[in-house]
Image (cartoon, rainbow, N blue to C red; front, side, top):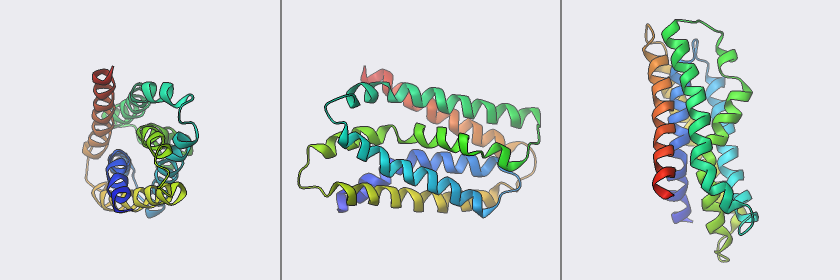
Amino acid sequence: MLAVFFLALGLSMDALALALANALSLRPFRPVYALWMALYFGAFQALIPLLGALLAGTVSARLEALGPFLSFFLLSYVGGRMLCDALDGAETPAMARLSHRRLLLLALASSLDALAVGVTFAFRPDLALLRACALIGLVTFAVCLLAALLAGRLAALPGKRPGVLGGGVLLALGLRLLLEGLSAT
């Protein structure tokens, strides 16, 4: 299980970056936002590997190949909007910017690489699949909760900097996933 723990830390890094970016752009920041982000990201990081294990050998290979491109488009869309809002100076209510729809898109985008992990889990009969997926979800939850709470303190910075930084992080993460997808093909 120690190997799964380190795998969970690695898988949670994309979600961590998204939690940081969102927390930086929310004004006013409330701790409940960190909880929502951690719940979404943790749940998707737990469920997507399980789905990958269940779909191993069927449609998962096709989804795996499209994953980096889907993630790029989802992250670019959300990051671009965040960046435009910050540069336009548009002040929208925090919950309108942290909607469940947005969290759903971001959680899906950040967990698509976990599909490949789930496929590998299917070929490890010695692995307790449900325990491994639960550990991945719990680690992601904890990492995202702590990161969002810490970044929420920085969200009080004056001006456009937090929103620009948050949008830039999302765009950079999307670009990194796109480049990884292109190099794999």
